[in-house]
Amino acid sequence: MTQPAAPIPVPGPLLPPAEPAVPPGETPSILRDLRDVGRDLWGARDLLLQLTRRDVTIRYKQAVMGFGWALFMPLMTLVASVLIRALVQTASGKGMGPANIIGMAVKSLPWAFFVGSLGFATPSLIANSNLVTKIYFPREVLPLSAVLAQCFDTGLGIIAFTLALPFLGFHPTWALLWVPLLLALLLLFTAGVCLFLSCANLFFRDVKYIVQIFLTFGIFFTPVLFEPSMLGQRLSRIIWINPLTPLLEGLRLAIAEGHNLAEPLRQVTAAGVTVVLWTPASLWYSGVWAVAGSLIAAVIFHRAAHVFAEYA
Image 1 (tube, rainbow, N blue to C red):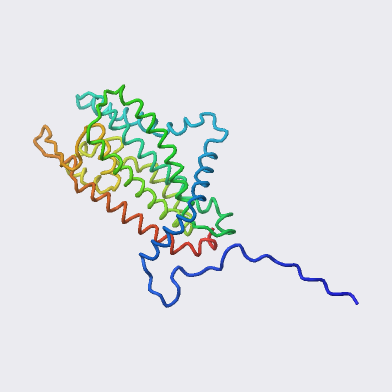
Image 2: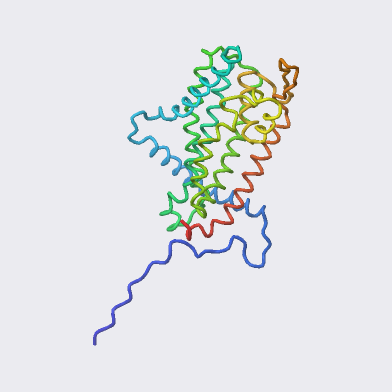
């Protein structure tokens, strides 16, 4: 008698069943979410490193300019800044000194880092949908690997900029001690924005187009091509609402002007109007945005991650 054929074993799903971020009957806890995010990222640190290395390799694979592309964006931003600033200075009867060029170069690098991070991180979940829908891993590593890959590019730009500083008449001061804090806040703020936008872009696919519009015109609302004081007292206050403004201006003042950011800085114009160039409260403002914003974005991302596979 013929025995019935044995059933072909079907492998189980690679993804665990979708579970709510907060189990039934339990109260949502932000601290618990942050603890879970930190634990997951630490456990996936090797994966984060591998994805970062992959992003860097793909970016420069078969590129004629190679690592020269890491300098292209900041250089083009700097050239545009110098041209616009030269026109403004010439029209006002003032000249441009090395401090002006250093200041614009200092702000071009972090702006290029912010723009590049957002450009690659926002579509990262959709671009890696084959991973998101098939295997389980902390989804945070995808946008964060894009940010770390951009850190590599910016690091090359910082090295080139540092080598050029002596030729611009730069003299180091104790104010340079503020630079690591400003860069850390910039990294934290950028990571938070990238986590939030990559999550939002998965649910609303037109987010990436809004981001592209912002990246195109955002430079006119961020003091990269100019300084807030050039806009006058009223408009400069609006520019300072941008959380990036204190970070960029802080870097400029600390590096190009040698100003201690713990002290306020004011300037009296030819018309006798006092314009505020810097206040220590501005640094606290950006610090709150960087720390609180990144923590809130991490919680939102973590609580929505269990349905990512359905939308990817």
